[in-house]
Image (cartoon, rainbow, N blue to C red; front, side, top):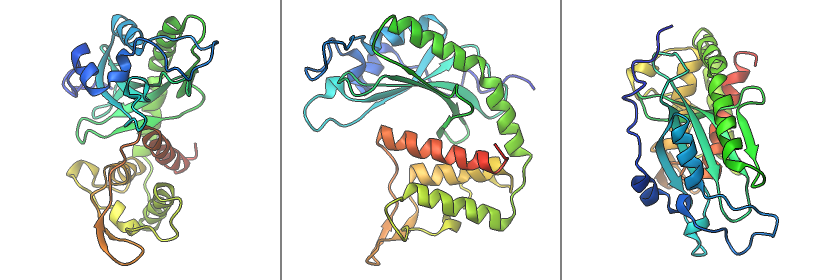
Length: 268
């Protein structure tokens, strides 16, 4: 397979100034006061700089809203693309997803991610044990994070194999509806009756997703579930539109859960 033609046109790289505007916690100068004496503070800025020097370009940055006025220490998520793209699929790029906070509540998390330039929805993969790596705030954190990112990048070929297997596996109409039902249960775990019907998640927003294979079914469902915008009804019968997922923790939970639903369809 040839390297993706989207490799350098998919997303614009972000400068450090743009990162600071979108996710101020990246540039925290010290840890939150609530952290313990064993917590080793490493600014995410140092991680970003090291990853850029190692050949990764930041393309997205978000952080959670801080209710207690601690925006400088809030959970934040960054996405990086390798300058030399290791995933050779025609409409998918491999990414590194970095999640961290400076309040002592989480280690650095690195995940394998996929990005589709055609629809700009980023998905997270979890294949085997390389898809999620925790790096604690101890020891040589910067070197450990860079090594983990490089390790994930080397495994992108396995992700490509799985995507191709999904493309080659056809689902019947009933199997697609069951996929959508499971996705709704994942999206609305506390609601006996979700606000929309499973068939709505199967509606294709673009020609690229028209088809009966696992890959295109997954992408249609994933985009509807994360971006929202579907017309539905509340438990009291009031008309509404589904909301998009903004919280980092919920984005990761739902994204990973949907990917695992797709893996089940190919026996993984």
